Length: 232
Length: 388
Image 1: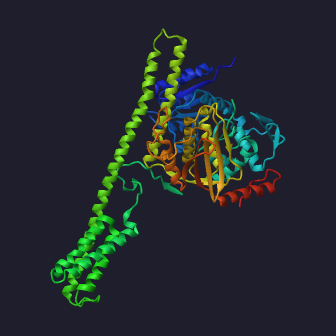
Image 2 (image 1 turned 180 degrees about the vertical axis):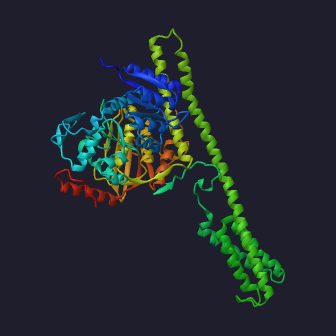
Image 3 (image 1 turned 135 degrees about the vertical axis):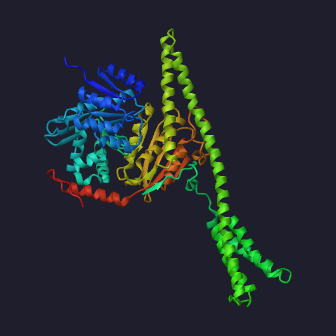
């Protein structure tokens, strides 16, 4: 039997750690704890956890710095868990190496869904997936036939729409910043052309979603980016 | 587009933090009054010929300018000073009935009088502004205190419940059903507190002046989607119908602030309407604007209150839970900062409908669409994206 995944919680508030500890163990994860940025970095590098939950407001150093230092030497998924709500903070965290962002106070279910997404995407294979097919809810993407179906009906996509959807599917469950998406789909010279992204996302929503203004899959994270939600 | 949000609350002593009210100095009324005052001074001077000394008569004009500046500000003040001096020169400085100045002495008198008059005008205007500022500041301070006391009352409510219920949970002899009820109470009150704190933080953010309207090209359906997503937990058991046609053009706005508007409006709709009643979100394009409507099937608002609900601290009578009436005030501040309009209507079939407008950008929308169509026409292999 394989060992259950270990989740490292870096948070200076004992209460927050206790609560997360309980929630994680109930779900069958092992929970490691660190109360400072420095301890967190060494724990992340030495104990090789499956995922790191990182609070940004740490006493000894900025959480963003912690994320950067961990990312320099490890590809472990980092989920920032913070009370900071500013979009700029989120973008900094995500562009700085964090894989996802959850705002405090959060629902337990939401956090666990993000952890599952992080663990699923942890393997680098998902990121470069280009054969076979993936089904998420009632969306199916067949990479071999280059075919997309939504609720059983085939959807015709333009090449750019297809590449955009492929990127979102490969990163299913986690938020991608506008910059990350533009760079991956349009190229490094187009990282500020957010309006293109918006138009294409809108087209995808109207092609794939039953109710485009209330999407099930292609979720907008205001001011930050997009996430392909995996229905639980 | 990057403009500072005009926030209707005091923000320390910064001058521009005050709401723009009717600034009197720019009104035509002030200039008319200046003319009237100069005419009166002239009339008195003429009437006093023989009784009053020239020196007395010349002093009437600075007095007039002082009055005009004090009441109407610097513009009409200077206007009064200039016309006054011209009239005085024309009527009283020899050679009279010409604008010429006969002697050096007269020129000096005229010059000094004019300078003094101008200085008086400027100083009076400064005093007037200070008095005005002090008055407004006092009023805003009063509002802020009312807001704070109301807020602290609202925060104490849920806190008291949480402290009480969690203390009661320590009792080992509780029946399971009591225990569940108490823990449910802790959870619900904590949620309520969380909402209040969220609103307070938003207020502080807006008030601190660090929030700027960061307008960019946005798809409104996307922002409606993320607002609905944020409200997911509260929307359980509710029908929300969205009607956003694909051809609605992109609009220029700040997505984070507009999402806040949508969340506040939907939150209000949820709060004031019976469980299970539907909420409609409708977007239409009209005259280079988009109109967003959030409509409910609740009791509506009392006739005559349609405008009042947007005012600070207004709270509907039916409101039973916590929260000062800040939601709609925040909405109005945000929509106004986008040069949009927000208003409330009672629906003829029952229920309230709040609508707001945002500037649409047809040109950019057409461009982006053309780009996508161009790609569609040239569809074939996974070619690199073309871009104009």
